[in-house]
Length: 253
Image (cartoon, rainbow, N blue to C red; front, side, top):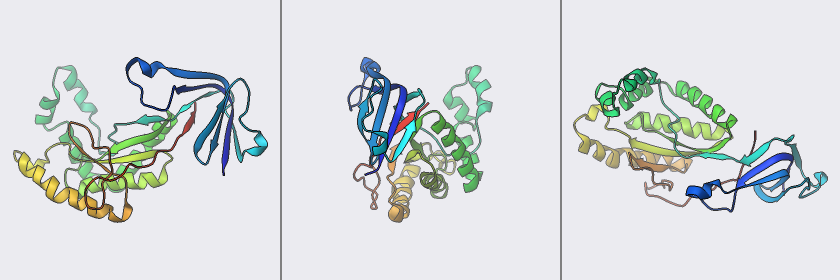
């Protein structure tokens, strides 16, 4: 059994209990001074305070000195658009002048602008850009995040986005939960034919997605816009299956 001991924690701050908090209860946090954490095989098994250690340093396989810093559970970012081409900073002046989201979309901006630039971008360009985002998120304490497609709106480009996420899952310390969001908007080639686009998603995109994930077995949620995602993975047949595992993380800041 691998033991990791984090000692000399200035303040260990963590929510009370092991359940989701809502409203004012989100402010109920433990703040332990001069604390230590013992992690065995990736599971937090003991927390102490007041300078006490849950085990001797000799018993631990790895000892991390927090040097009086803050330790918290890793942050979970539950909604991201990780993989996309281009930027839309040119829309900020339009918004400041009162243009709404639909006004910008009808003018060819918004999602459609990002769709064009994502389709134009290579896998390598999208990968490098996404890697930078994840590095920054990790520096800010994020250890788990969701990542959507939704800027391809056809099989080839939706898969390109999801393949970037698949490769990033292999090469980053952040746990990434992929989401297929092919219904983010109506694809430009289906303009004015929304029902046909929905048929394309249901009859072609999702079955092809399930087929390509057959060997990878990536936990993949399917999300319609704008109501949020179905938080269960996609099985080989295109139906949902069991939950993906979760691992506790500790962040030093």
